[in-house]
Length: 263
Image (tube, rainbow, N blue to C red; front, side, top):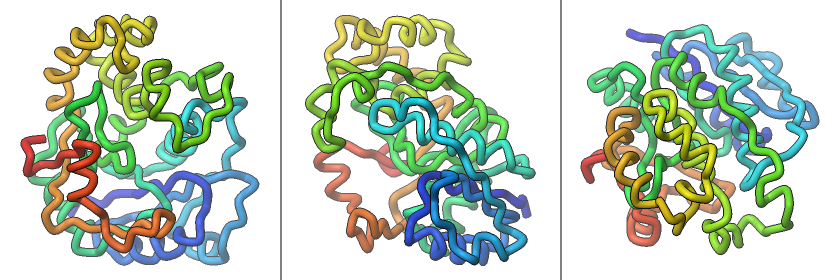
């Protein structure tokens, strides 16, 4: 059996203790690393269980558009504490069922490839865009995914935009999934570095060279990212009021796709 650490990143939430309790019980989990903020109020469980490691982070100078810098900082610093060759970066406010975690673990073991990361859904209609909630694979590869420049002076730092209104402005900034994963893909295809240098021409929605970027994305994404199935995998997301993940709605309204769809 391959043992693995799990990094739970983000602001400590009322759900985090439930997530920790659930995942510690899995036979293949070594340690759980909680990577949050120095200002968070943590529970007693986090400090008393020897298999729970805590990373308290200082916030970055700027949050980045759609809080992307917060995800990058907490993920990277948590991953740097991982002691296993295989690990997963997950949210601390989502709870996958025990059977779901076992299925993802077995699915990964059966299909793992060098440099390829496993995710909980893909957006094949967008550029370099897996769902960014779960990244599962070789620890060195997940570290490379998040060891990227932070975004400074992005749209979200220059203009006050409500989180739920960001979609109106996709023509003026890189989507968060694209920002993170295009940086990772650029380590394997230097053309993508040029796209990141001139994102307004290549990576914004409706960019003049969007189709050129999309053609490259379609080729490289299957090599570096693989989606878990939707069948038999379920999670609760109390923050969103979801006792079960709404796969059908996500597919219908956002074109989210999974292993069963060929991704």
